[in-house]
Image 1: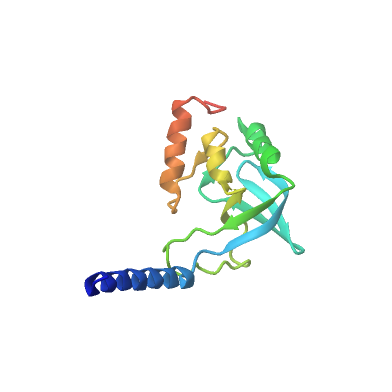
Image 2: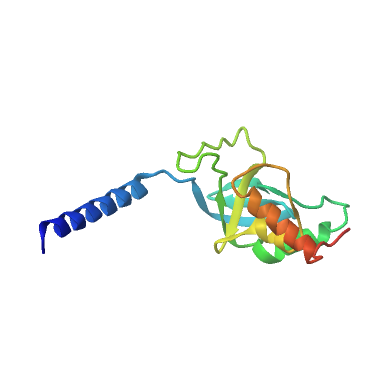
Length: 162
């Protein structure tokens, strides 16, 4: 093997090792697994519990009908059937991907505005895709995906109420 090829292989190995080290040490948004869904209040609001702590969570980026509005029962029931009594993962919105996630203070957020995932499925996105909720006007890292799902659901005429 000539020295040029050996140097090339060495450079590739060093770059690969550097990338792996950077991937390993780069902070990621906090992944809060192990929250049990104890109740579903509406199609965009749940109560979760872990280690004796109980919190209300609003699905970030999602708006679902409120009590008394058309579609409330269907939207809520879709979540009840899907996640009540199971453990979910709560994920924060990361305004600056690749930077440390902002601390969530229990004192300042009531309810928590978080993404909810079950079996690696985004629960809020699922609500939108099935026509049980719509994308809120909030801007977040998944808002483009949520709006596209809403357009697709409207095109498929999935919405419960007109």
